[in-house]
Length: 297
Image 1 (cartoon, rainbow, N blue to C red):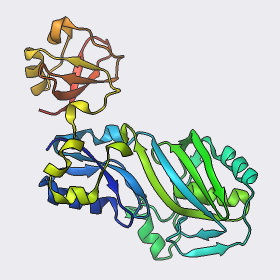
Image 2 (cartoon, helix red, strand yellow; image 1 turned 120 degrees about the vertical axis):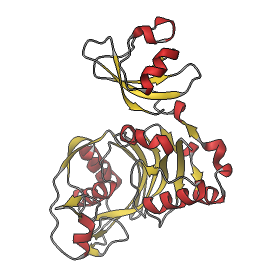
Image 3 (cartoon, one colour; image 1 turned 60 degrees about the vertical axis):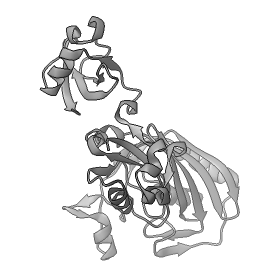
Image 4 (cartoon, rainbow, N blue to C red; image 1 turned 180 degrees about the vertical axis):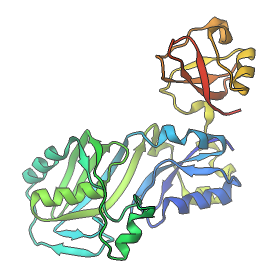
């Protein structure tokens, strides 16, 4: 099975748990997810299967959409509701204060990942050290938060729609929001509704995945439907043969002597005459040749 299956991850499972279920049900060992979701979180978890695992690097760097519920008045060591409480306050922030804090958190800046994260410190996961009450020092990483819209603010909770870059921690965002409004806060619930090109409308429930590969056939995203925003060219018969051997391509190897529609160094999808995605190629420095760098045949 070659392609992507978008799973609506249920709460309480790790991303690896979902992968394990899919491997058993789909009878495919080559399965990897394209962006970790914490056990607390639900929603879009794209699974790359078979030859699509070679394309994972093109998915993990994409931006994401979330629906987050923030609980004010409680701070925890993990920055979410499942962690150990570190402070409590009876104060409830005004809506205007929340809006002002959100405005200050939008944009591009450096964000420090939470200690309870999968980041590695000296070869060990940060959360393993944090669980042993060891001091965890993580480096801040550049992130982008173009959208943080307050949808509802009721009592001690706020519902916020977030669009963020890869590597952004919504838990850290919740903690920072609590600090800015002066009440403390943690992430109460999180649902991912989009991960790059994959959306919740494409997702299938994990119970459906458990049934069989046939049960999810209509939701299968085949190789040729992946990376639709990337420019593509169509190969002739000789061009396909050259791709199979990793050889450079020129316009003469394209159907109808087509043109290479991309700038030097950029990625291009290579489609054969039957409409199958056979490789991803980079354009050489002259802009006249294509080098098949990720071959799928």
